[in-house]
Amino acid sequence: MQASVSSLPTPHRPHSIIRSNSNPSFRSCGLRKEAFGFQSLSQFLNRESRWIRIFPTNPRSRRQFVFSASASASAADNGSQLPTSFDYDLVIIGAGVGGHGAALHAVEKGLKTAIVEGDVMGGTCVNRGCVPSKALLAVSGRMRELQNEHHLKALGLQVAAAGYDRQAVADHANNLASKIRGNLTNSLKALGVDILTGFGTIVGPQKVKYGKVGLSDNVITAKDIIIATGSVPFVPKGIEVDGKTVITSDHALKLEIVPDWIAIVGSGYIGLEFSDVYTALGSEVTFIEAMDQLMPGFDPEIGKLAQRVLINPRKIDYHTGVFATKITPAKDGKPVIIELIDAKTKEPKDTLEVDAALIATGRAPFTKGLGLDNINVETQRGFVPVDERMRVIDAGGNPVPHLYCIGDANGKLMLAHAASAQGISVVEQLTGKDNVLNHLSIPAACFTHPEISMVGLTEPQAREKAEKEGFEISIAKTSFKANTKALAENEGEGLAKLIYRPDNGEILGVHIFGMHAADLIHEASNAIALGTRVQDIKFAVHAHPTLSEVLDELYKSAKVNSDITKPVSEPVSV
Image (tube, rainbow, N blue to C red; front, side, top):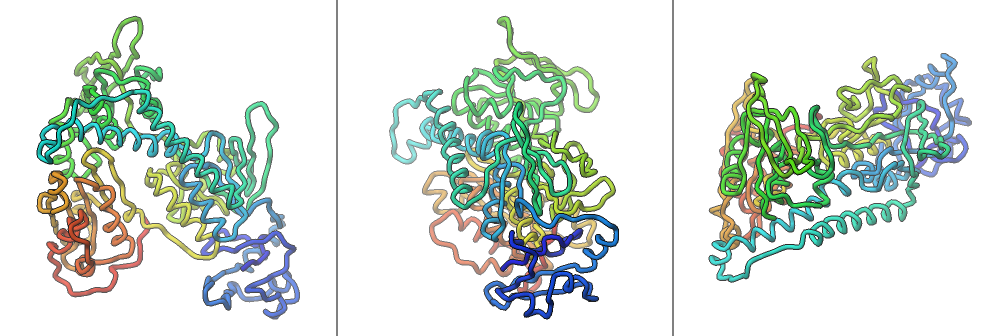
């Protein structure tokens, strides 16, 4: 279905329009404009009705399109000249996972799409993040299995001492990234997405400039623009990164060295995963954490269990409640020097001398040079401000028409799959279906051995919410030690935790630590997304014997007072 009314502005965009490159004749479901009683577009726009809804007659395409006639008339009254044709329906700046997901969905919805990329296809996730890190973690997982003599003996296995080839391990990570990058590029080309090489800059409403340094720029127009430029490693002041002995995750993924002793600044997802890799390959690790406890972003109970399994038995020590105010790379035969101060008093605390330091203090949005000042948009700590529909907000607090921002650049939830989900949500809006993403339903995972996964609220967050809104919460737990499959694998160390409302069965959060936790969490995330209650999902059937029965037992152990079985509510934007 197409309608070439691209001149109609949609400042609030409750719905949108699919465009065509044909002349401005109104068409819907194969019917000409005359079928709707209009001889011309101008007659259509001059109707007194404020909103006109057109419903496709094809029941398989039951989308609702809303056209604002008064908005166009208002623009004409003000003398503003709106563009009537565009080079593209959608231009996406950034070809990471978010931009790729948005582009694929846009093509599926019939939009002429281009994607602008100034670096390499796949962005951070594919080239310097999720993908190569999983290759390294696959190696660390195998090494741990081969090094765990007690575990192997329990299974009746005898294996000679395990070793590894550092360069071959590094090549495995690089080859995986190259393969996935090629797959992404080929998928876009096969679907007809134009890949435009160069750094993208917004030069005005619905207008993007792109090009390479030293070459002339190209300017294109688009009905809608999505910013998906991602993020870069955040390096605090006072830390000198040389890329060899003081490194970020970008450097660490190349695995150019395996130091005897490495300090990791930050104990979040990135720091934990690299501690898993380095210790499996023989390094000693020292964590430097500003908060009073390790893994501050995790549910406290899960964090304590994870520390007991992932940190305490391994060659890892830690300093908490301290800042690394200065880190000097190794040179002239001297080691890396790290100066620590107390996080609260700011008094000097200690000085460490190590072989290398990994800065894992999070990521910062990559939004410089986007030309946001050309459209009166001011970033907040580098992040592009957006509303619940990912519409970019200008300095006056108003949505910028036809401009969206997804992924790490907006800071709502810095995860690759969140960026992709946001991109798909935006495309849904552009093609006539309002869509608001519930970020509390988006899962997260840390791929250590064992894994950690979570969705929704932590217990402290849930208790705070309950106190503010006046309801009670309950906690249900189940252990991997009671699961047949986990015991068969001799991997009984683990816990699943459910946080819910006993009055109506609403699932507030689920946290898992244990074997394949990253795979198990999706049943819970889908339940939250769909508004499924505990009293309903406990009737779901799980194959036996599987790890999924950990969640089966978790739901069945929950005690709900209500017999209500309808969804808790419509998805809520967060």
